[in-house]
Image (cartoon, rainbow, N blue to C red; front, side, top):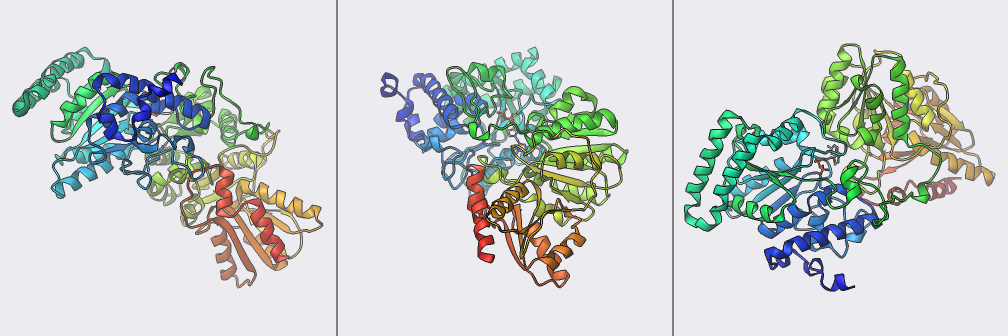
Length: 633
Ligand SMILES: Cc1ncc(C[n+]2csc(CCOP(=O)(O)OP(=O)(O)O)c2C)c(N)n1
């Protein structure tokens, strides 16, 4: 209670309150903000380590800059909890990522302080550059534009593209590089090595001291600031000519590296940088999970740990999810190792999700043939295409939502050339708390229109394994997508001997009268529950597990359309363009006249919440489908 009464954080309802604080109050505010984040995430879940790592940076940014007039753009946005708490959302923060609550990412419609909606990475520099150029065109010379990007997000091609463009624009852009050497897993790539080099090199550190000495005098000098800046530049350039700096070579002024947890230094540095026009980058070194010991030690585990006891650090097991079933991602991870140990042509690729996809199992066991390419989905696809041209069998594992990033690569580099690349699309369907930016609901529709591709969705773990097994038996099938959901399967003993599957063949799961439900993928298990429930009431309807969206099993469909009057399609993808659309097209093309009722994701973006809440909102939950069946009987 004592602590609450004296709390500084409780007095901050928006950044103008923050500006009233003395600089000496800031460390206490940082402490309280960190405690608040720890408390909230331990009870309500969400991303953890990333926000702890930017507490000082967040406080300093809102203290120094005049938000929301000045624009801060967070990359990915999973680190913006402190920002949300300081910008009017402290009292609703307990609803973070919950159904109808606040979003786990910045979102324009949620707050004037959220300048750009995020969730997918590497967009901040481009968006912020757009804003800075808009200010130029609008002749607003007072606005500051700040992109905050992690070293992980900087591995994405879009970030490089934006740096390249920004370097010739001379607009007022500050990029803050939040370098903690981590993505979700340890960061990868040559840029990471480079950042480490400039963070530890003596030359750079000497230069930095020189520069900071000069900069520190800026705020006292006022009008002669410009000449000081020139001196700073000369000092920088003389060193940089000898030791070229990547960012400088792109016409950015590079500052740092500085300690991103030193609030005093951050405050004075940002104040100084405000006075320096043009594109500039401030390199901050931070620790992911800062202030929570366990999170600092195991940064991958504490990226998004779920609920935990903040005192003991014990991560709770959600009893509603506690089953003996295995997560689909682990079925993938274990199966690829099993297959790759026998088939030396198999290669595994992940864009920055070794843990999230469980490709890490292969990276540990067969490191020569398993690659984390960074947050670079476009590259992951084209790289896989290159591997396939030489007869290798790439299993490119990408979350369904992130393959959206590699769409042209999928068409242009893979499908047109009919290259045998296997896309394992994890987190397909509704994904729950990450919300609209991460829904894996578009894949069936966006894949189906691509020629040469095969699209499969396994009903369960055994089908996933058998699909993976089948597709590595040849190198000539062409692009092959296997989409499976977030979460667990339905079979305890799934590690049974492999069986080859017939490509394009569906399966009749149950037979009945009048009504047949056609489903694709894991959602078919709910349809099995529905047909079982009806059986108990003496009602028999048909159920077809389509398994392949493309090619469609026409023979099977003709049989079904002849036998049943009503056809119900069920999918956890968009109602526009997926299974339901394919069945409608089949029906029209073949002059069938059955009544077709489609269940799927409506033409809306589905916000965050639990997966079952989202499913209910979409109307393809068990109760809604049962109700419809009974209406038709
Ligand atoms: C396009 C895209 N691919 C993958 C992800 C998944 N993802 C979320 S956070 C993250 C790591 C980001 O690392 P960094 O930018 O360094 O931030 P940190 O978590 O280290 O603070 C990844 C890979 C994503 N959000 N967007």
